[in-house]
Image (cartoon, rainbow, N blue to C red; front, side):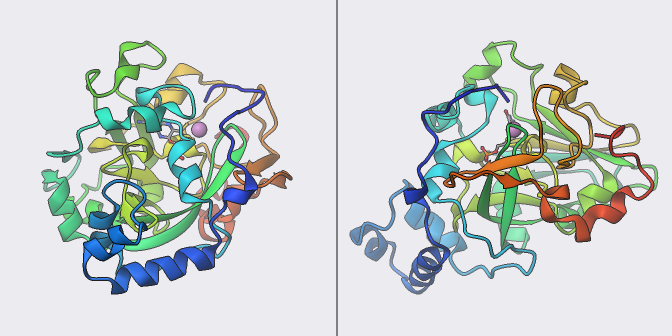
Amino acid sequence: MLIRTRNESDPLPSEITPRSVYLDRRRFLASASAAGVIAALGLAAPRGAARAAATFADIAPSPFSTDEAMTDYRSVTTYNNFYELGTDKGDPARNAHRLRTRPWAVVVDGLVRRPATIDIDDLLRDYRMEERIYRLRCVEAWSMVIPWVGFPLAALLDRVEPLGSARFVAFETLLDPEQMPGQRLRILDWPYVEGLRLDEARHPLTILAVGLYGEVLPGQNGAPVRLVVPWKYGFKSIKSIVRISLTEEMPPTSWNRSAPQEYGFYANVNPEVDHPRWSQRRERRIGEFRRRDTLMFNGYGDAVASLYAGMDLRTWY
Ligand SMILES: Nc1nc2c(c(=O)[nH]1)N[C@H]1C(S)=C(S)[C@@H](COP(=O)(O)O)O[C@H]1N2
Ligand SMILES: [Mo]
């Protein structure tokens, strides 16, 4: 969330992967049974890609997807915000090798009938994965279009059976300064925490992502499991989640706690409400030169505006 006047690492438009190229490549990966074939053809550029392709190549695109041009894989995985792995956009990719994503468990507890500790590999086995191509719009006025692999958070919430008293969902990132050197600095109160109202968490657009571009989620993007809420600013999409707790009270969120006048609990993308230090009216899609107008709810208004009926979105920013 640091302010920068210029980003040397901003990718160039020439690096954009046309959607058709990705789809052709994905079709090929789906049909190629031997990982060796993929590697031999040099398609498995990111490490672990061959194994990942075997995991996610056959999933169906979701009807919730946008059909906009996707941001190229390299930008999605080298231009990141993940302060536990460094505050420069390129740091998370450089430091992601420190993150150990196995074994990994997610605790789901709080106001639920059946609290559970779920191993990440059971999570991958037990839920039906879909590809959702979503826009991610960050508060720093840049955006990307990313083909996520994931499943609705609602499916996991159903499994633990929230009690009638549950009104919010609190999320927590791993706390381990050995793996996450940024946690040795007091940039934020660690661990990183986030929250959603229960109806937002149950909305069909809200997913837990475990992959992108048909591959296992890279560490810098929040491996092994992160939240994606496409109508909210990117900082709501908490990475490397270890705990999901149902609560009655509105939970604290990292950015709201550190700068409450700048970052509210809701953080719905809203071109009408400026960040105190800059406008939120326009954004730069990574890979494009000309800025575009930012859309209310990041363009997902038809699906989510009713969640906020009667609320003053200037007060509840
Ligand atoms: N644990 C954790 N989650 C986090 C962050 C972080 O610093 N730590 N940064 C947030 C911010 S500010 C943004 S814009 C998005 C960026 O996601 P991406 O790097 O996959 O594009 O992650 C969000 N999730
Ligand atoms: Mo952000």
